[in-house]
Length: 556
Image 1 (cartoon, rainbow, N blue to C red):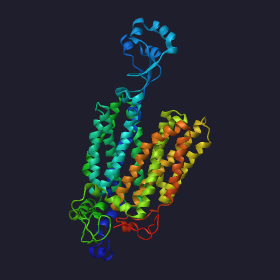
Image 2 (cartoon, rainbow, N blue to C red):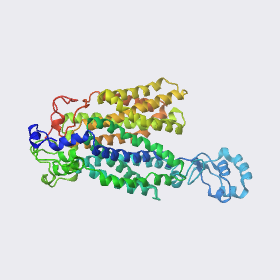
Image 3 (cartoon, rainbow, N blue to C red):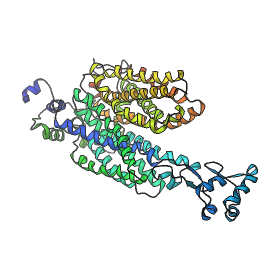
Image 4 (tube, one colour):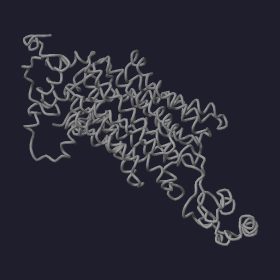
């Protein structure tokens, strides 16, 4: 270990030096990697429970008069059904009295002139593997949008969590938001399995989404700030495998479940183990150093390194990296609103033309990746293939897609890799225009390979984004980017429905155009391969680190 004299001679912060040494391979790095990846398994499970807990069984209008007369479901449907959401306007009390055989003759004579009524209640066929929330809360026909709202609430929660808690982590610390997210999830997740009210379930799904964003992006930022270049590269990509394994686990859980509530319980209660993570997760030493909380940073580092001498005096800087003001919390101006404090990281970004341009590009690429990812999953009807087969194939290709970036990033930089994968994905989607709809196998193959490349590109762009913003605004950048990704996931189902109703290749072509645009946009970003992370704006904009635009001037 370097002596104090040597440290001063080389003008190296001893805490930063020790952090860099630990980042090259230590228990600190592995602990944070585990605490980052494991919770994503729960996020992957809950993001994919929808297809099992909201299964839509065959349904028809309920006719209480005929049910009371002990008619079978088949008899009631034959006599009364005018579709899944309407019934013929007959005197059903009379039909119940005369019996099924006579009612068939009665209906045959009047069906041409019969009017219809909307259903006031529904009966359901026993043609699904388990009871679903659709049956429990009657989420069909005019209330069918409520079924989709349960999935929308999760995405909206992730959006809100990324937008607000992501920014808050730059102010209050990565660990604080991580712990908050865990406590939110272990309450909202299990509670959603028992709440008897539809809107109560929706609110709990919203909170579950918020908790996932709080956990994921605070821990990912900590991992990025602690891991050295070698480990940061593959860890920031490999942690996505936890999310990809979620659908596989859910499939097994659903196979063994008889009700949708059992699935909710089985995918939520195991999260109690995250309480241990909340206890053991360290605060990001790099964030503590950037905030001027050096004693706390030293305590964290000494747990994994041993005693550290720290007599180093840093220049007085603000949280934005501008000299002249202290960053210590005790000396900050009082009276600032909570919102102003939370917006500090964003002010850093949007007060600098260079960082602002990077933010616009990353928002577009994240939104495009997420929108296309979910649109391709929901586009199954437009490519005329069995939904369950398609879902299984998507799950099988998900994990390899997240592993592919690791060898790619060994031989090429982030900019080239992300651009190449986006362009490949977009080109395959555009190629569907030349394929006949009857050639299902080729369409499915093109869609799956495109989604494979897109998932790989998404893994690269997450790492890429975390590397070209300074510590003082990194979590804010990741939070805003994630928020845009969740906007994409919210828009995706509407783009599939609206464009698919016009022409079957509409959704894939729309996504292909966006993805090609993202590939071109990535070429404009600076390369971050094999370069150290910057803590302040000045460090990030130093000569030789690359830029999107020239002559960037930061507001003070």
